[in-house]
Image (cartoon, rainbow over all chains, first blue to last red; front, side, top):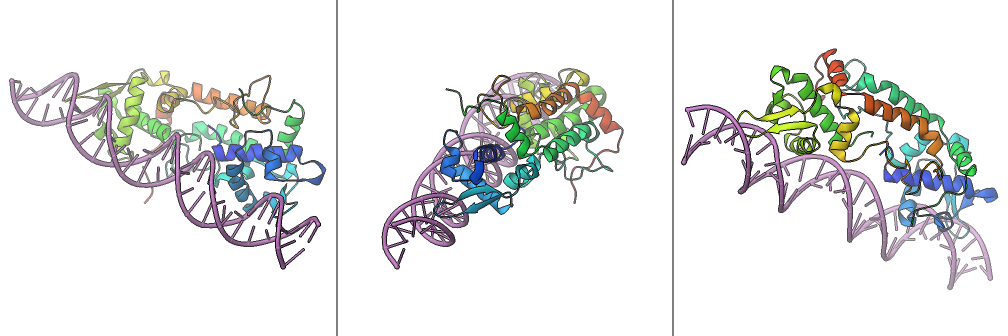
Length: 146
Length: 146
DNA sequence: ACCTTACCGGACAATTATATCCTTTTATTC
DNA sequence: GAATAAAAGGATATAATTGTCCGGTAAGGT
């Protein structure tokens, strides 16, 4: 599993927001999760973290809601992951060794390096705008089978 | 985090075995974890699963221990992961949707596809032999800082 | 046969991740 | 300023993962 459940919700929630917020740019949680299987309460917690990390802005009270803090093309997957989970899948040693760097690398280090590099590139360069564009080019994707 | 802790231990344990078992090909757990930070009890559980999955063979009693069930170049990272954890990082939708396939793909599907492909290739083609070779070309890697 | 050895397996404890509930705070509307 | 609306935050519940312990089982040595 590449992303934690928390990160998956963050990505899905932000995609909904970027794709559906429309002109007003802001959406309430209830509105956002409607028609999806996103768990409202848990997503609320995740969104709180995204607000603290500066990815989202929020407004309380009547007429409040969440909005992107920056244009979608300035929000990378990497930023989302770090905001939601606190660290990235490309940080640290693959097999969990404390001491693992160029001078003292673990057995997988050199072998995994190109993958890590490419994965990092992907996470850095793919943005919410890309996700929204990809979403727009398909029929709205269904929430869950059954 | 690409691998779960369980998988990380599996990789490290098997690497130790492949790299240090020497002529007799078999090692006891106590011998294997000596000089490492691998937790003996937990690794024992992981190795049990690897035995059931056919990656390792084991022998009880005096003179017993664990040995690779196949030559190192026939044990891929993918097999290790599936044996240790039951599923692979490239299976299922990246953002956790139940319905996500070619005809009804999630927003990240097409964008992530090349990465998934490459990661899958890496996991399928990298074997214990590669890890052991990589290990042999460096000084024995230390277990932990401090 | 008996003793020692080393993996097996079940039970259990600790930690983390996930999920929900409920009160408080902040803003808007009347 | 009272009522209402919506996010913020604390507390708590549930589940999964990780880690430990101990008696059982099988193998070898004497």
